[in-house]
Image (cartoon, rainbow, N blue to C red; front, side):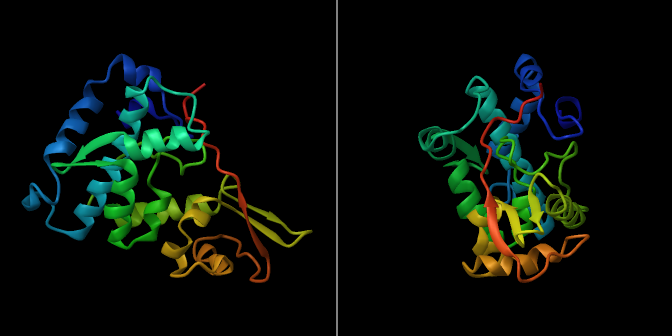
Length: 218
């Protein structure tokens, strides 16, 4: 389904999914009945657990957009609350929401690179890959996602004249996950772990406003 409905830029053909939702519906149903809690024997390693949750979140967000009639975006606090907080999903035998799932389950796995892989289907999200995460390769996949994200002009921009570093608001939303505190200036050191061209440590950190438009193909 990812190969069929996601293009090289990570944009989603929601119309095609809505027209033939069988594969996505089957996976969403499987997510509801399987997981590290309900079928622990299938998730024997931390890597298997991590890959499961990344795939599950992305699939559930995608299915949510289709179920909601493919809205234009989540450009208001009300729309985001309705979609991420009040809309219910079933994961691993448990009813929850996308907001709770991310914050109470996925973030607690302790790997900040998940923020370069989780996709809420908005334009400002990381690029949605055309292949799923797997237990055997999830560490390398997350490293690749971090490098791609932190070298992309969509998510990080330098203004050398003003000595400013403009970062995706993802790094503002989850600063503590990346650096262990709310000191946003420390983000430069984290970013430089994955940058091809390091950012000077004395640049001022600012944030690019998040684009909540649904990331659908033209």
